[in-house]
Each structure stands twice: as structure tokens, then as C-alpha cells.
Image (tube, rainbow, N blue to C red; front, side, top):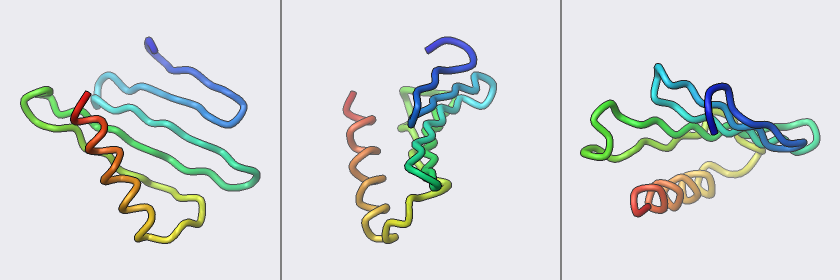
Length: 77
């Protein structure tokens, strides 16, 4: 992924190099979910932050579990 990003019918990924941020937006029918991965300026010395700004109507508990799993996955790559 270079520059602006890529897009699919249901998934779009954008990269903001100045903010060290990758945003993936998944759309399902009329709702969408934004997954934001923020890289610290001293990456890889500090771990990345994974967050979700919009969700698909899932419970907060399930969303927290997903984010913890994604954070662990990204940190181990």
C-alpha cells in the first residue's frame, strides 16, 4: 500500500504517513466499521495502538476482545 490506499467493494484501506496511521473501513450493508492502527514515531520500540472508531452494532465486550486479539497479532508480526 503506497500513498493514498486501496479500496474494495466492502473494504477500503487508507494510509496517513504524517500521522503514522492506517485506517481500514469495512462496510456491511448500511453500516460500517473503522479499524485504526496507529504507529508510534519510535516504532518498533513502542507497540502499535489498535482502535475502533465505529462498530457494526456488536457488543462492547466482543469489540474489546477483537481489539485485544488484533493488538496481540500486530505486536507479534
